[in-house]
Length: 252
Image (cartoon, rainbow, N blue to C red; front, side):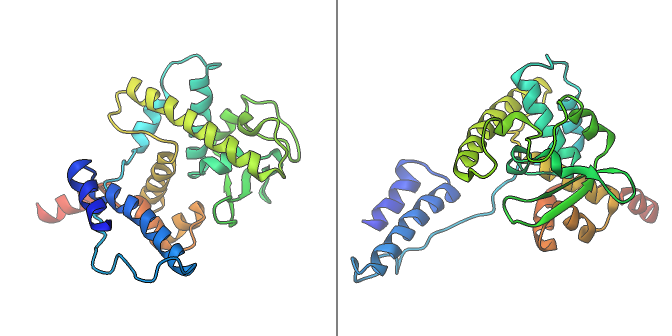
């Protein structure tokens, strides 16, 4: 049965390698659970391989981010709201949507130098991240009435108690999906032929930081990564042209 399902995924449904791999992995997990409960005595995947292949990531360049930022749209429209969230995430060093959705005014504060900073604990890893707010990020914040304490910065989680994790998760999923739909439309208007999602702001921020800082360890800290391998995965696929002039000079 399992071999037939694998064949069905590849041949009849025409699934790609990674899509078939995900579906087989779900079945694989269910089988392991059944074996753990004693409902299966033999392991049916023993002679069945689950293939995978490197996936092609969509990579949004900083120039493309600015094209989205420069679009002339109604600033009170849902699309403009989604764009503000997206751009703030980018200008604040590549925040995840979950962190933008749960950003509170107490996370915006002055550093020891007097410069305003955004300091928050990442929902995904619980690691603390703090970066200075550049003028573009401050301009976005100026669109909202300044609050205090646990009040939400953005209206994504409006009306939800900060302690209600289940409700926050549901709202985050709903608003993230809606934001991605609007970003797709904005990208098309900007002439960007890519599947633009909110997460691409994080990749673009990682690349811009790497291009300008040049130290992957520092960039890893800005992004809140636990190791540089994660950061390297973010910037893999971008074409690094920063040393082109050195190459031309050396080879001429």
